[in-house]
Length: 163
Image 1 (cartoon, rainbow, N blue to C red):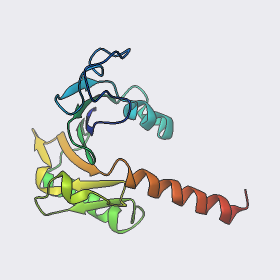
Image 2: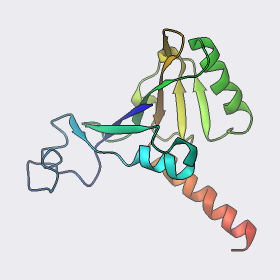
Image 3: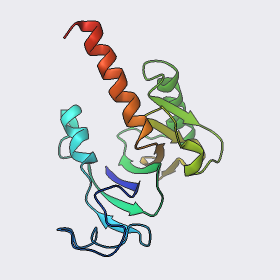
Image 4: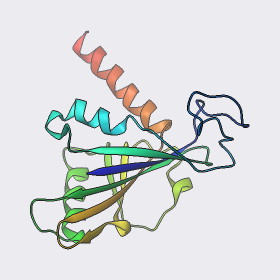
């Protein structure tokens, strides 16, 4: 699969055109869409080793202060439909991934997810399937609050385990 994170600018970027080792990130964050690298695809393969070499990606930093979007395109082994894909995500969001994953059916935009604790919110209306096995899924996330919430969960786990 191929993943693009459409990512709000971060403190690694410049607010004015200034020196940076990545010439694109040297450009003013609030003025440009900036293609760059992402560690997200590599991180996925560390958590799910069976996906190593099967997922790659890039980022596009955009001039918004918060909330980002993942654009994921994968080829499935089985034929499917957008409705089936959304149903699978919705079932996971209501069971084993409750509080981490959510299915959103309303046509919302980035600002609507500001302060959202879920790690990933599937944008149901945007799910597409081409030729029965090429799947495109969009997922929103608050790159600050969502991350902080997962960090809080990790601390609770550590305390509970007495580590």
